[in-house]
Amino acid sequence: MSQTQTASKIEQRDKGGELETLIVDGRSIAYQDVGRGPTVILAHCSSATHKAWAPLVAALRPRYRVVAPDLHGYGQSDRWPTLARLHPWSDVKAIVRLAETSGHPVHLVGHSYGGTVALEAARALGPRVRSLTLIEPVAFHLLRSAGRMREWREVTEVGRRLTEALRLRKERRAAGIYMKYWVGVLPWLMMPRKTRRHVVDTIGKVGSEFETILYLNRTESDYRSIHAPTRLIAGELTRTTARAIVDLLANILPDAHVDVLDGAGHMSPITHPEAVTTLVTGHIDVAEARASQTLFARRISGPSRAMETSQRRPSPFSPRTR
Image (cartoon, rainbow, N blue to C red; front, side, top):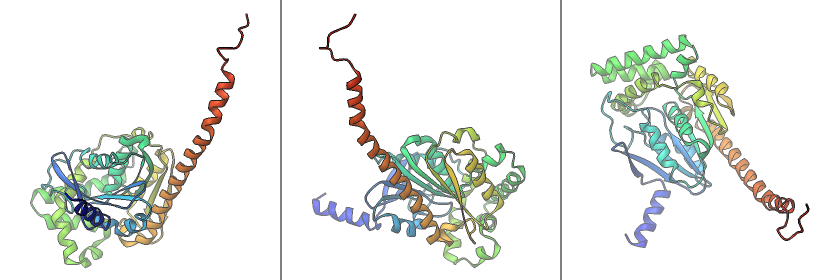
């Protein structure tokens, strides 16, 4: 490839017009990679694509490198077979692989299913995560382990009806069950035909996600090792199941706080993009500033500590006392 072609490709990439790809578990994952600076990785919700983050990407890219994948089965990534077994690590591995392209700690952001993926990636990456932002992560398994049985039974019933419809090859019915639960009957029926068609086309992957998360073998203690500063975002009008998970994580994660968006439901990145963008960018900016201050303090204190150590250490040429 010539230098002109290479420059053209980089320019096209920075405009967001061309997606990069990587192979995870034998399947192609497409991802947007734009901007320069510290790396921010965005994980979208079920039945969405990287485009769901467009307002946030626009706000971050002037000062951050923003990486937004199409998770398995969505967008330009390989299609997911209906109810094919989804390994808990599959989408998480994509986030970890993308984080490894950065030589520095990364910021993770996830919504709904993507929030659960980001949560698991944070466990795997440990200190390589500079900040974590979770917008109503659907970590349903925590409801069971915390004894929130009313909420647990509610969401498992949704999962049962969804997967039953998929086994009968009733994709439209399955999509209706899923979307009516999260956004309501009227909003689902009023969605543009193209949007509803997209949900129907991807509902098979959603069913796999439900089955994987509901019975994920994790306990509260598994997440206490995540020390990255965490902003948990919940919609004021969201489902009680989603709010319960946010509240549980606020008590589990060592450095977490909750922000509630007035008038928002579960789909706040879509319905309230400006408010979500403000919260996410603010959290990332603060975490990045703190990291820079810490690094500066270490650089300043480094020479003085070395001098103190040399002053305490006896010279090999000084006379010995007996």
